[in-house]
Image (cartoon, rainbow, N blue to C red; front, side):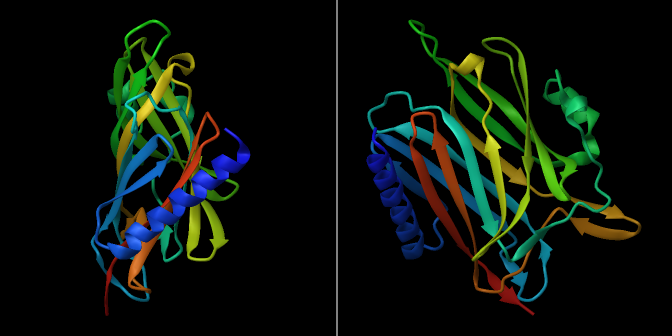
Length: 259
């Protein structure tokens, strides 16, 4: 695929995603398509009633599924970048920190026992392992997000997954929550998807619920916080694949200002 075709595909998909959401602001999902490749994605937050001028605790949910119109296996997802609305904040004060060393070579139960106070999100992931001249093998794993060490003063998470087929393997992916100044967007995360089964694994679907509350020095804190200053919150996802395809979709979710 030429660079021109890939860029054109990206532009059409991005425009379509924004249009769908502008016409249906209460929709729970978007569909982004580029050629044969299709991404169904969803995202939401709760509660939707928030203060207008100060942040309040929220919980985020989001995920997606990758497929093709032809029914063929999709290309391998390599990177997932998400930009988040600037009308919010991430708080880690007093929250226990987990390290990659505590999570290496652990299954899901052992990882969660190692850093129970650091868990900020849970979910699941699914993939297909396609070795040459073999039937595709479905694999799945619970996903766990742990509050990680700060990176250049910015918060981070450690994403943990464990699979048992075709062989047992632990994946620990560090992700920095980067502050940015990009119009409506104030935060960005970028995850490099690890190779599954030596590169034969193809990520198919995943979903996460993120949120945590705790008490520190007698005061209550929330991991994620937001305000309803403009009547909506939005996020933008960018999906990079090993064949050079780059797709982007924008989520716009309404909120109700109070106070």
